[in-house]
Image (cartoon, rainbow, N blue to C red):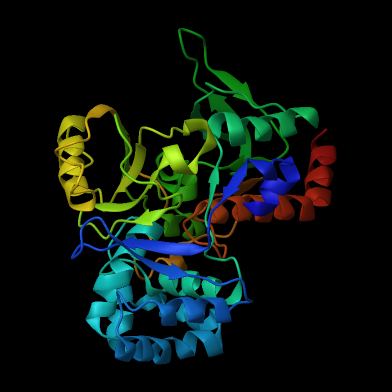
Length: 403
């Protein structure tokens, strides 16, 4: 992501926060426990942050956790990938790490990373994140975009493409892949909207950036018989719900991401503090992630807001339910977001290059080191572009042969 911001020349739109991880303390409503990372190189800044925090983990728990992490630190990424056969909870048990470590820290982190609990999430996900924290000095430092993503991030991407002769066309839903006799893509059939007829779009190379669930839905029948594409049946998106709440008064002055440690909620932030566009010294605007969301995705917005307010009463007992008035709310449901990173999913993740000679995949679910995340999605795009460039002479030869 940082490389993308640099390429777009919009690094100034990132609002960097103090290097700390902040957790609500359910046993002390309205208070926070902090892991403060000092300005020294990794992994020492992370070690100091853990050693300084005595609210959440005891010294024996810290020692057992450190010993349990040693194989990942010493053996590196190969070991991390091998641990995909365990859930995070199973891995902790295997390493002799107390369950209280899970409860105090990793329920919140699991929900933040993949919107599911430690009993479901692959150990590879948490180990990858921890390795990054230990290897990169600023690996756990937070930054917020300074405004709404469509204008502050997506539009610069569109401008970048247009300035180089490309086009970004909206409201052009894919209806089907039209295949040539050899099974390659001959054209894309675009569904006409508002009474317009369908249209065919032809190209030399085709790349799908669709989420894995939509890709499976639109996959041509002949491809479904191939082992490469059959693997996609082992992947599915995870549901997530974002809740936006506007209040008539200030609930917190914290200018950072917060781990709620709530049974219902994952991470949240007061955007009136963290984001320049929503800045307000007198009123809070909270953005919260409800996770796991599988039991809530079908419920009404009213039910979701009501349940969220009950949880917030535990986080802000001085102001909710008495004191702060909810002015408005917005619930955003995503039935299928990033791929659900349960144990054993690594073997189902495809490469960006496919057996179809002129067709490529990209997206966080394709194989890359940053897993189910924005960073993973961006990195997959880079890898896809490299694969297309590598095969460019072949594609040019095929085009000339068919001319």
